[in-house]
Image 1: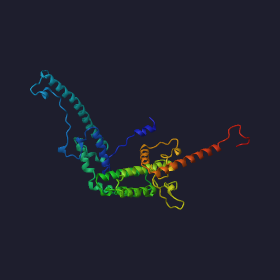
Image 2: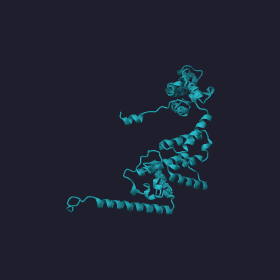
Image 3: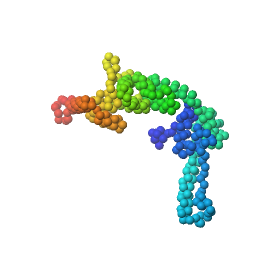
Image 4: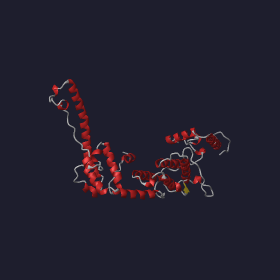
Length: 363
């Protein structure tokens, strides 16, 4: 097996080492249980008296069809057909029961294998996985008040862009913490606060994107239009950075620092006097002119360039609704880019070496 395939199949287990791991760990347990149709039998949030109990189905007999008859041969034709249907249904039920029973046994082992050794004692005298989870939850799961305080702290840290953390990791943290805050209905992310917090946070990374969307949000609010949620804004920014980096020849996962080799990632938006210029995003969402957009101008596309289906759809829809002035601008940009490309090809031909048989002394 190659090194690449080894890494692609490697699994990373979530280990319960403390309260900070509880939400992710119990999420994994729940996912496995739902997949095996046993969550209703182990959900630690359910009161034990109300918990569903897995019971083995009984094999159907003649008495299940006709209580007065114990010999199946004495059943009528219709009753025999009914008994056959019950027996067929039993086969399905017993098969499911056996899978669920096996899954419950496997889950006991999985729980003990994915918790810290210091917590193992809370599972040793438990009869069922449900008892294990209840015991672990009572001793390890953070209280709602503690969880809220922790999330608010994480959220406040995200509002200040770090200098050493990778961009992808930071964006994933925004999505995760925002999701957790919404689940607890925290006021920190109520209404549209998260949008402005995120745009303020990325202002030092991509001022053009931040300024453009601040203005666009204000326009949408004034027009009474719906605003994108944080997930959409993070997606737009993530795509923006990928396109900008691709155009500059940088890897899409480049370091998150606001500078790259001494230059700001938005240096193309800065004048020689150091004052930033403002560019409205193109139809594709990137801060560049129409003539620099591969979605609009075919002649500038690299040989291996492939469009993002979602962005292409966005561009096509905006083109349909574009004003005559914008359509004229795009047409002019395409014409300029085409002429520029023709000039480059002509210049390349003029510089190409003369074949054998050319003038003597030509170098």
